[in-house]
Image 1 (tube, rainbow, N blue to C red):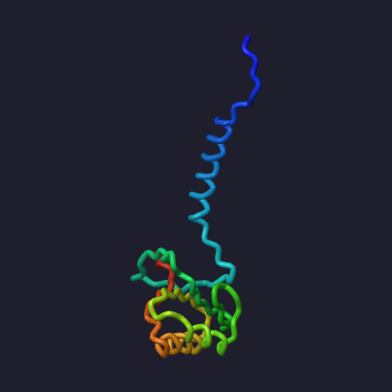
Image 2: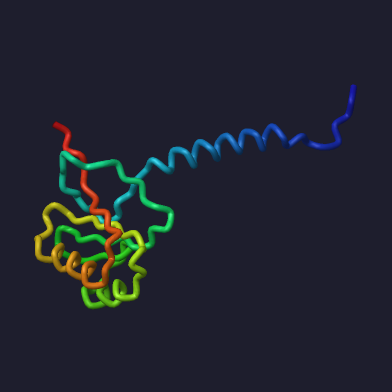
Length: 128
């Protein structure tokens, strides 16, 4: 009988790679909204995949609070941040359907002021 002096780790590596592929595949489908923003429903919405260079995610929650990249921010600080943003930078905007219209228009006005036109406003598809 042949004696084994070393452990063959190749089958273990194969199993670990398969498990890693499963975790990475399923994790990409999990979308977590830390801010609990209830997006408004629309019928003419399109599928949206965030671009890889997305670094500005704006949000307004139901209490009309502003968020930049999921962190609370005052409106004056938001204006300062947007003033320094590259006009070609893609921006994602999520607004809770219970938010007032005023904070939304203030953000849109700021985006226009600094010619930030690469804007995606997120909504949910209406299921009729």
